[in-house]
Image 1 (tube, helix red, strand yellow):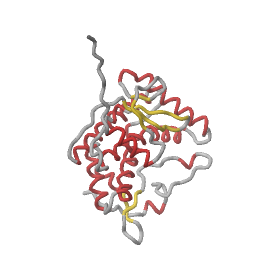
Image 2: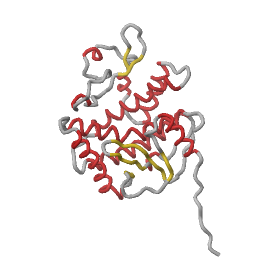
Image 3: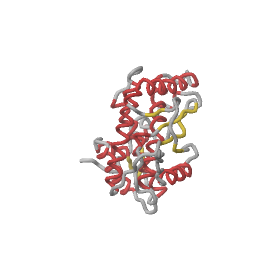
Image 4: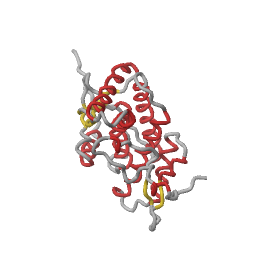
Length: 258
């Protein structure tokens, strides 16, 4: 008698997908086996990964020829990373989940110049205490993003320091946003959680200096570590939290790192 093996889908995937869609419909997840047109990180598929990301870069180049390579490269990296980072924060900070999916196995989908939609092939979730979940997420993100960077280095110069600053901006922006989603989450809580993330990512705590004191109120606001380059495209602008703005340069750090 032949037996057919069935893979039981962890119900937490559907809960994650539901919660992610409530953040933004662009975070549209599903369980499926990805096809050939999907970005799926794997050391065996680096040529395909490299070509997929290059197509994204070239789409940005076609749509914004005036913006230049600084914009195309920065934008490519940021939109490669936004979904895995958002999903990591939902998994860690939503009390109904409080567990982490296999983020490094995420498959991502491209819609011309944007990356939106993702899938998993099932996979094992990680449970732990709060800091343990952050450490696991950080490991998964490091594996995933280093794979992306190595794939891109096949056709462009992309320094680890460049990607590191963009990752810092994305992570610490999401930490600051927790004040809007978690009751009684204070500015000091932002510093504490950001410290956990930086330590887990093996990044210097000096990056906490992106958190500044607002003039007059003394409350925390974030100023990016690096420029997103949006002002270089037609219709773009200099962001209010741009590190190049004179008023942002004069702000004192919220928390001084010894």
